[in-house]
Image 1 (cartoon, rainbow, N blue to C red):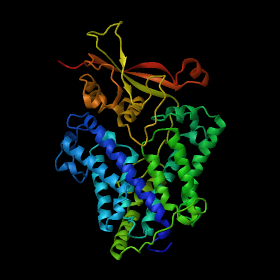
Image 2 (image 1 turned 120 degrees about the vertical axis):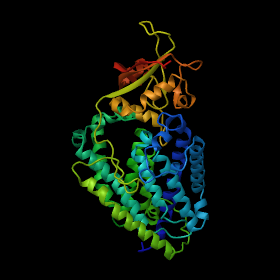
Image 3 (image 1 turned 30 degrees about the vertical axis):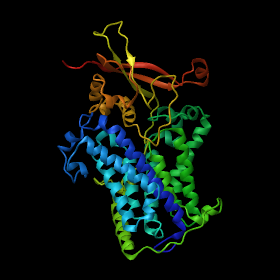
Image 4 (image 1 turned 135 degrees about the horizontal axis):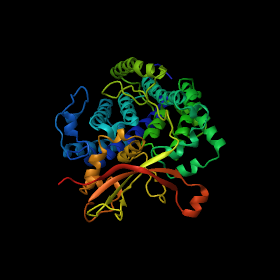
Length: 475
């Protein structure tokens, strides 16, 4: 690897760029499909109301100029189209400056969405996608060899993601230190997947090995990313394998996929060619002087901004998933500093009875991803992100999480609001809206293998109590 360029990383760059563009595509489509109900003009947390109390420099966004649902849809679908073009290789056919402009446009459009998304966009993978997407601006295209400094910045980002997640676990819940967290995690994670039941029922000694392996992958392996080859490639491969394990065991939107994409920054062709047949490397010109200068400025800026996340990682009061600037650049990451021992779910019900009494029949609304009906196997949704379903998990932990949005959500169910109902799997009142809706709190657990065979149910649930009292529209 030379000081300026590294032609042997051309394949890693290709996978890194195309992968980041594919995640952008999913993120923009997610925004386009869900925004009207969540943050639209008549949404649960409307953007215009939010922007009334914000300045551009506090929440940089194109929507400070003007907001309308039509404009938001246009931004989302244009971002999706541009992402698809980059996935198809258009950026590699364009001049270098034009490719950089494409990536800059994707970053600013998605930043504009995240900064007005409020609670629905408060997840760490939003910042991770933005930071990764901004880094892509300085990675070049097929017209030049990959710049060394940008590849190192990608590895530094991956290091912060993995090592930060490892530290927060060791400082957090004691079950990470006694290797028992996976006795509970697969059952209590935000949105289980179709294999989560099976992961939960693995033998407990294997769960302890999983946790120990996680500590190795997040606390030891990240240092290997900065080692000479082939050690760096081996470290990256371990990251990929552990992230695929997480993909199989649950639904974490695009968090795992962006992490996998970043791992390609440490994989060179010669190391990968030792185990897999590789295509012939193209002849790549050195990057132009102006591009090298821009990359150097970018690198110095990243190293300067790294002070805050590194200080956070070294702090005894380490915080998870935090941005230190409104542009979501050079953030701190981490997940599952604590693990729940029991799972609770908020179940939304409605009735069309004129009055509530002992004989009232309540019918349940079914969500697309979160657990509901006990006989329904959880679905695989990631890397697509069901924002409402995820916040329902937080609501079950504490009503404080649901304070801004749950009652407006219930009010829209009382109106049979079409955009809101499209976020759900099943509306029990298709002909006319319900008279009353309420929320009940249940405790869920995975059934045992014997219970599954007997009851044909993946979950067992028991009522904990009332979460939101029956409510009706005001007349």
